[in-house]
Image (cartoon, rainbow, N blue to C red):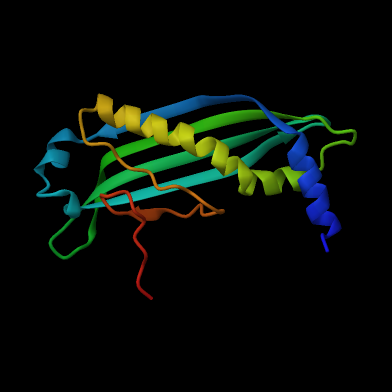
Length: 168
């Protein structure tokens, strides 16, 4: 049996249409000499974070902001990450959505959408921007993992682009 909350959310999802997705801000820094001084890609720690937040909810539309950061840090001989970023890319994307609903949009449904499905819409934009910026920096591309679920904590990324799992 489908709960009322699940049915309401499914109805809400069926009415949501993205109107605008765009870059609001971006910054990138490369410490070129330090980046190329490391011995190999195994001598680096890659961190990725994305946070999605509801910016506004009106009767028939809403806005979501996705803030992201990618950091590459060197790792010393003891396996500890350095304090300085070799590469840092940060930015913020904005999206405006319309909901063709007969009722006023429920803010709780928008919050749920922002923490789950909206991530699927934003990740290709983040991935493309990071790939483009690293190409323009003349460094190998930084692979961003495919994001599924609501992970917003910084994640360690192997040079291959795979997320490293921490041992328990």
